[in-house]
Image 1 (cartoon, rainbow, N blue to C red):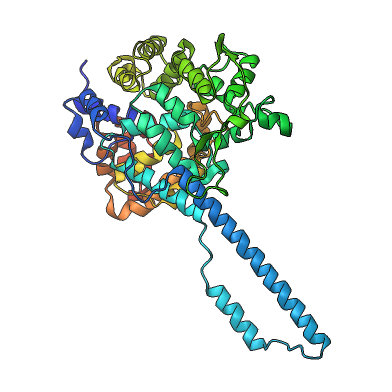
Image 2 (cartoon, rainbow, N blue to C red; image 1 turned 30 degrees about the horizontal axis):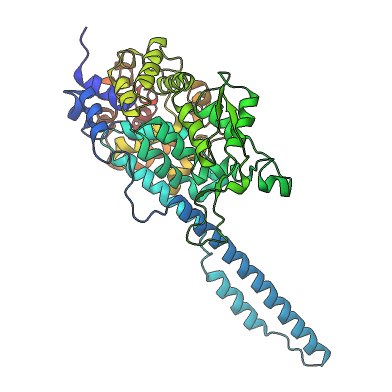
Length: 483
């Protein structure tokens, strides 16, 4: 039985992309796979070109300076208040103290109340990054590369709860330039990025026998080394043990940041500080590394990037993300083999996902994560969300942007999100209420699902008691929730 070309196109947009926009199902119906492959070849795809955005290091330094200046002003104000009180006290002793006029005090309080609150610069920086990310997702023709960016950003996650000002810059600088490049290059960019070093406490890791360690008797922090082995490369319960974690942590000592307080031009940039580095060779996953200084860490990362366990770990995560919570074993094996055969060429792996029959034959059982569901709503409606509202919606659904609950990122299976369907209904109803005056339910159904909409879904929408209810039913349809 042949499948309608538009049904394949709609499947491609939901399973691989960010959901259809008006007209995109028809636009790619003649060759959905070709359209996905073409997006991988587009120059500059996946990058964010916005001159108004600061680098992660610049943003962190600007936030540091903002907090320092605010703290200094607060100290100065306290000092002035103390000086006035002391002066008033001296005047009272001399019989010269004067009570402020009640009218003057009231006028001063009223003027202060009318002053807008001081803008919080880190929040402004963060919201600019959110807007840039949303604009990129909304503008994407299909969204396959953007989905890959989101996948890798969650795989190599940091938390804005720890480093708010650097969260957007981390994704733009460490993920996007390498999303169709080599895994080894992305791995090095991620692990040497200031946001990752700060998030996983490597700035506080000092080799016990380093110069700083011997003088200060400070110690090792294993967080970064452990998460690289367990989450970013080899995978949990694979080929490493605790001794490897400790040795790798020693290798990574000295990977730190330039302090912002002492270097306004280059504060919060990556620097290798040999004073903190544990000297001597280290054995990691069965191999001894005796390279000097920063090259020792680079050598370990290069080998981890090419390890068969890394290939298997990455392959399974990609297949689980795009195809099924329990992905086909044959697909995982082919992805792993392609990873090893191409030296971790992520574009070739992305092509294989498009080519593999399993990715098209698997039933649509993957429940979209909240971020994926929300962006598919906004794209189908052609509504660009305001950054603050978008952040609130994601937080309400349990997926706060760039704020995963742990270093392993947000969960990528149905069990983690199925209990949030009641909250999705609430969001869908609110959206439907806002767009009801200008949006026809039937038109939205065709834009968002087209041939994917079942007869039952069409009948349910048609029987709705109001336009708002019909729109809500489209956004809550099983075919729209899953991919």
